[in-house]
Image 1 (spheres, rainbow, N blue to C red):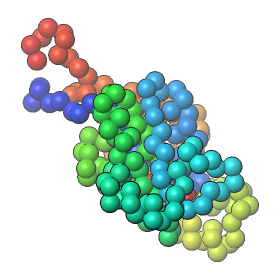
Image 2: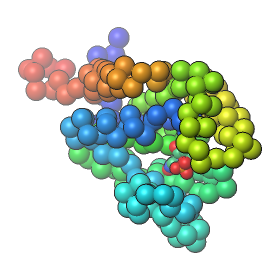
Image 3: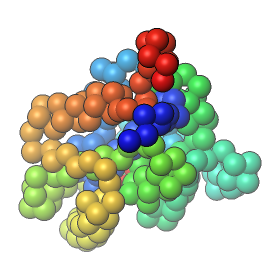
Image 4: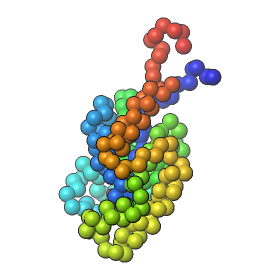
Length: 207
Ligand code: 5GP
């Protein structure tokens, strides 16, 4: 056993899920109830929807601005999702590292995998709906999408779920919001206690 393992400071937490799994509700509650946590506000070229606010839900930019951010290395990862660009700011990672805080990324599986490749200590959690039928029911209940859009979303969800289940560190099934939240919270608590993440240098043990 290597007792001297030391992980970089801060916790990079990636949450992914197909839309309709309840991920955003879980992410916001986790941020509210986890001291020293920050939500990574992604940059996107898609237009704001409904009540979304610039600088709160996303930073909305045009394609030229997004491209110059890529060139300046401002993203820890970026991706083309359904024809729009989305990117997670490198500054969120840097701040989590320097402040030893928890950064929460609400992004897709390709983004989560990219963060994990760059930061092997990142923790990836995939939120699953209780069943495909229930996911479809939730998507239909929103009454915002056509049958064709729902069919496309269901296909995308299936592929996202297969990739998430195959590659993520943790899987949380959201059949009951309270239980799913308590599982999510337990992962964060456990990960904060991971050997190498806790500073034991001041215990006088000489390790
Ligand atoms: P929406 O446009 O519905 O808000 O998001 C579409 C998809 O893009 C969701 O799966 C969301 O998690 C993902 N997404 C949001 N921000 C980012 C990001 O910065 N990077 C990546 N890779 N995906 C993102």
